[in-house]
Amino acid sequence: MFQKYKSAELVKPGGLDLKDRLVGVQRVTKVTKGGRAFGFSAIVVVGDEAGVVGQGLGKSKDVASAIAKAVEDAKKNLVRIPIIKGTLPHEQKGKYGGARVNIIPAAPGTGVIAGGAVRTVLEAVGVHDVLSKSQGSSNPHNVVKATFDALLQLRDAKTIAKDRGLTLEQVFNA
Image (tube, rainbow, N blue to C red; front, side, top):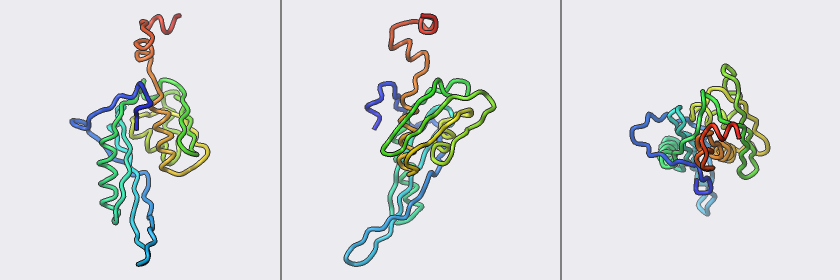
């Protein structure tokens, strides 16, 4: 899932204090010749609130096992996000399907100005001050993936300096 992001650092779940947050549960129906078969689909975000976050999808006949499957899936997709003093290194836009998300760093004390699925992801990452705007589709699956798209494109100054073969001072002064 994260192959297209060159700065994405995959993280193993061992030793992390991960908290899971439920984004949404949908009841889904499959119509067969014997009638309707009901099931549940759950999307979950897990994070340690210190820069590590992952998202997962679980499907099952009952809600509890759908959530459990989603948490297990999320733990397989953990990535590290750069956070600087409780906010983001720079503004970034993300998109997935019809969902568009814009996340903007904010001054200390601002809080998480975000709604729904974007707020859940940003709180799981551990961002304390951020502004965001979600446009287009409000489908929680696509909004979560658009938020991840934006977060995975974030790069801090050390990463940029390393990529360009410069020192931190050269990046800021050149």
